[in-house]
Length: 154
Image 1 (cartoon, rainbow, N blue to C red):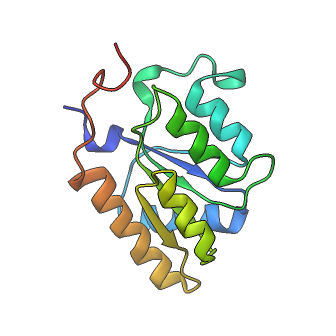
Image 2 (image 1 turned 135 degrees about the horizontal axis):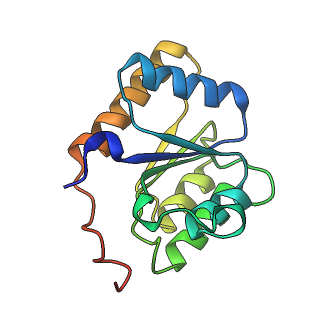
Image 3 (image 1 turned 90 degrees about the vertical axis):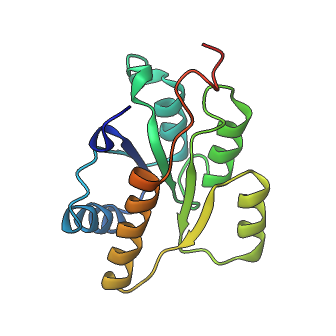
């Protein structure tokens, strides 16, 4: 079984303030998992599909959870999610849409594309911090991931 601290969080976020807040909240709640940060939708797909500058990324180091913003440069979060769900090697990676959007069509489309969760980013730091703590607790400790090799035809 993988050590909880070895489970990787992929943060797909272009806003430096939100990145800093997320990292601070994780540290504050002693969530010591490695956080990989990509700043646009295209880079997220390169990371997840191990292409471009991520071609040598270890396939054993797929993220335990992807925290995905919707409003991203190059490809938006929904386009990223759609590409993930169409690919055999990534279709079961848990994706939490973490966004400021409460647009009904974004929520509906996110779930249609099989997002595992849709969470609106709280504006208040204390609420944001609590939300990050709960995400970490659930996705990194409580949630049992699909066993390796059971979803990518290994």
